[in-house]
Each structure stands twice: as C-alpha cells, then as structure tokens.
Length: 152
Image (cartoon, rainbow, N blue to C red; front, side, top):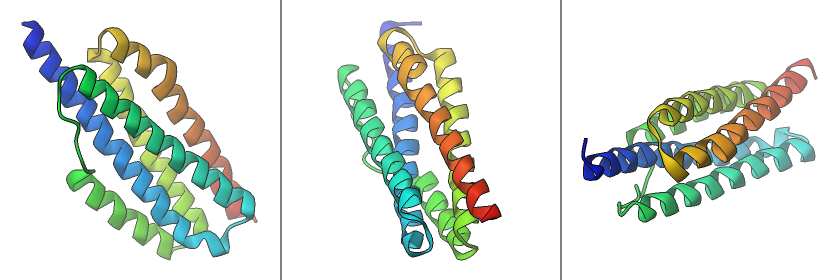
C-alpha cells in the first residue's frame, strides 16, 4: 500500500474520530440543559468532560492537518442522531441522561480501539497514551454520576 493511501486512510479515520468528538461535546452540552436538576458537582463534572471533548477535537484537527488533510467541520449524521438521542434521554431525567452519555462514551472507546488497530506512529501513540485513557475516565465518571443520581 502506498504512503499516500496510508495517509488518506489515517485522515479518514481521524476525521471519523473528530466527528465523534464533536458529537460527544454537543451531547454533553445538551445534557447540561438539565443543570437545574443536578448538583453543582455533577454540572462541574459534565462541563469538565465536555471541555475535554472540545480539547480532543482540537488535537484531532491538528493531527489531520499534520497529515495534510482537511479536518471535518461538524459531527455529520452521527451528530444529529446523538443530539436527538440525548434530547430524548433528557426528557426521562438526569439519571437516564447520564446513562445515555455513558453509552456514547463507550461507543467512542470502541471507535478509538478500532482506530488503534490501523493507526501508526504519532497517531497510534496519541490513541494509546491519551485518547483511550480519557474515554475510560469519562465512562467511569459518568457511570458514577448515573448510579448516584439513580439511587439518590
């Protein structure tokens, strides 16, 4: 396979991950509509995770640029689905909203793990050392929030 084909494949994978990060950030912002039903700590945690998704999107944009590609500008069709799904979850309450976000984070983790299998060089290191561990932290944090809210 040529270097050009490998680079294009990497850019495509990175743009797919970028769309996922944009979608995740939008879903977390959507969930913040329920802030009035959350504790200050829950709101702070949701904002922290949302900010991390924004930062990760910026890292992915930079990586796409580094490879000579054009970064995705929006979440695309997946983002529209995620926003609708999150809005529906929000209607069912905070616990369901947190569970929905957790499911989205688990989906993102699977996408990162799949990307790790085809990534090379700095992209592989970024996935392994930063992006995958961050996803795992988000899943753990949202799981705790969902269970606390459910039992509270």
